[in-house]
Image (cartoon, rainbow, N blue to C red; front, top):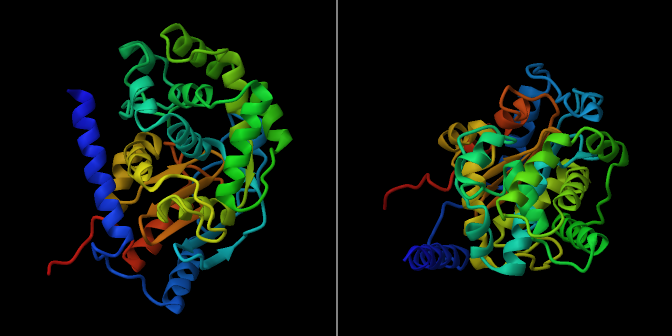
Length: 342
């Protein structure tokens, strides 16, 4: 019964998405180029001097990133780029990577693969909680918290660790529209301090949610979190999801359109750690943050947006990024829940 209900929900969400993308459900159009760029510029000017928050320091390499770094990029579903600030400096993608590994698993193994293994519910606990695993033996997770994310990484297909890693990195690169690489200093720093993630992986293995080597899965997960990205890279990745899974610049299809609603749903409910509900209430945008200072958000059918700014709030989300994206989306009518009556 549960699978039939879930299949019905999938059918309805996919149908709505298809209607939206084919123009049969009319959403408000974006303002013109000048207005979009003005909104981006204003947010940059408004928050460039904001000094709230602090870099993550539990990974030593992240504490060394320049806290003044601030870049905004917005890419529409027709591939237009609007930007302000630093578009060239790379930071580590960190937990934003979880979205795209989840997408890969869904593409390889079907929409129920994630749903049936670790689940898609917000845990209500911190992103690296051991208690959250024990409470339901790893079954009531989602792929955007560390236990579920490591389990998702273990589900990526490949003949060995090197093959799996090449597959993941190539997939991320296709989303970004350029070849991405690992920031080795970040990887080394994380690998030396990831004992808790190893413990999470072992627990997920013990409860049957990881079938292969849990320590191999943890190492690959650590590598994926250490991939270097710019604000433009992240915006392109988000815009690909906004464009029903097709990169709006290269035209390469990366996610089947019928799989996108489920990915966005998990982003909406679990993308900003403990503050996911607050974020969704304020913006309506599916989003994902990373402790490297990146934050992506998706306005379905309209645009993907990304901000890089390392100082984080207590929940682990970039302070400047949240404020900038909220203002820009509000100015552009990005909230998919915000409609006008006929």
